[in-house]
Image 1 (spheres, one colour):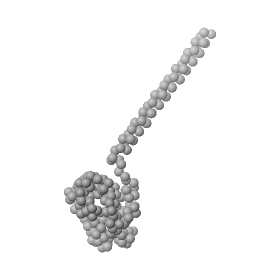
Image 2 (cartoon, helix red, strand yellow; image 1 turned 30 degrees about the horizontal axis):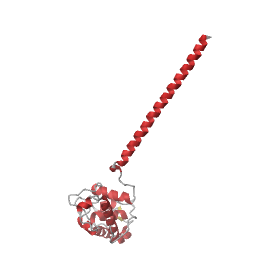
Image 3 (cartoon, rainbow, N blue to C red; image 1 turned 90 degrees about the horizontal axis):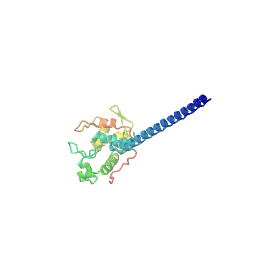
Image 4 (cartoon, rainbow, N blue to C red; image 1 turned 60 degrees about the vertical axis):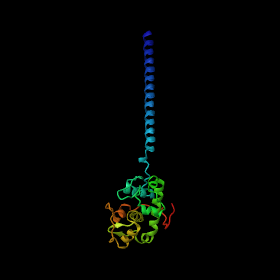
Length: 207
């Protein structure tokens, strides 16, 4: 009888110890997982504060268009001046900036907001100058490249609206290549298919 009682006592004790051990293991796992989640959240927070991850690229939208142009022009650097004296994220010439009553180059380089406004203003002017050519040429093919409004506006940013007009009206015979080897044809192809309907054609936009 005593042996039976002792046997059952040991059996119950073993069950309690086993149960306690499982609970402890579960608690440890819960602690580990919660730390893992905490680490992930910390990394996400750090990621969101890193400016290199905040580039507003959203596919073929206007934001995508302007950031693609900016990357081509300066890799998105607001403060750069190239060897020809072109300024900022979108590489503006000083004569173009004067059109928008911007005369202080240093102030322009130090103001991302002003640069963004100037880019939109220039797109508006170019769209107004090329409004008839956009209507006439979009959907056509020149030198094997389908012409789109965004391609035309990007090419105008590179070469000036006048040179783009000559290119389109000569059916690609009158070409333009800048000092770094970029051509109207290349811009028409590289920046085709973006949504630039956001831009309003405006002869005299105000910044």
